[in-house]
Image 1 (tube, rainbow, N blue to C red):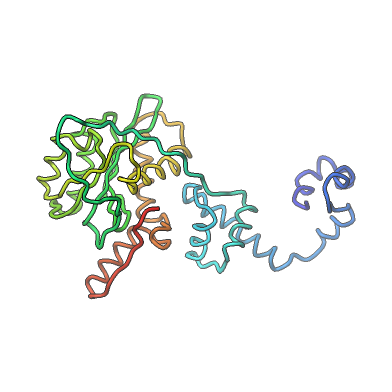
Image 2: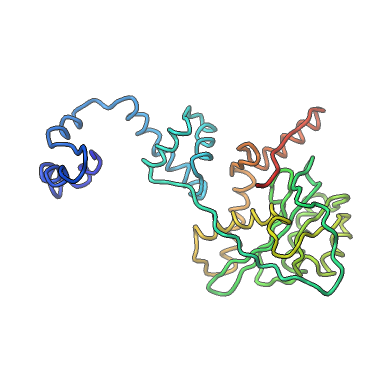
Length: 308
């Protein structure tokens, strides 16, 4: 109430605001009560709020404006603030920020029924004991003023790290998903021996030129079913978060190149800064670094990898 009066007092006057709103708003201040409150020494809670609210606003904006109470609480504690979840929720209300809501999934897979398909080696068990054991892949699209931008992601199930990606104006297998796969393999040292490559039955991933490339790299192809989010749940979830956290927040999009640059920045944030509830509020890079550190020291490493 005091903040509302502060916003309008110079135009309307304190007495007029209080006289008009007193009958309509339960517990509204009198003019005398307002002046007494303004003269009172700020409480410790008010001083702390004045310090934390700008910090909440800054951190929320730096993380694409998508964090809700749970992740903002974890982020504040990472930055050294001793706050509880309820306090975080109250501070977010004061700052006027909130988390984003996930949208409904849209399936864009086009099946290829012309040839035999790889078996499903995952069977909805999206977990792995180490990095580079299981990768999931999927394609989504972004509408731009100059046509559709198609986006392919390759994700490591163990850490949820997006190991590579590609944006193109075409869905052709040898351009969109294959370039993402080739770059992911190059970053992994050139060979993917024993790794399971899982996708759905989309024609992008079941084309002979693509499946042959998987085998050439030493990986094992695996496919779920068409239009079934559960059979490729982690990849579908990442597509959904990409749309929720980036595409719908910062659109409309003008060109494919604009989408590509924004995706580059989002993927870096996803891997290096974004807190993942499935990883106990850690980042994918932290999870992989912990695995390799523990592996070198002979200690076991753990990571949350189940998708819900």
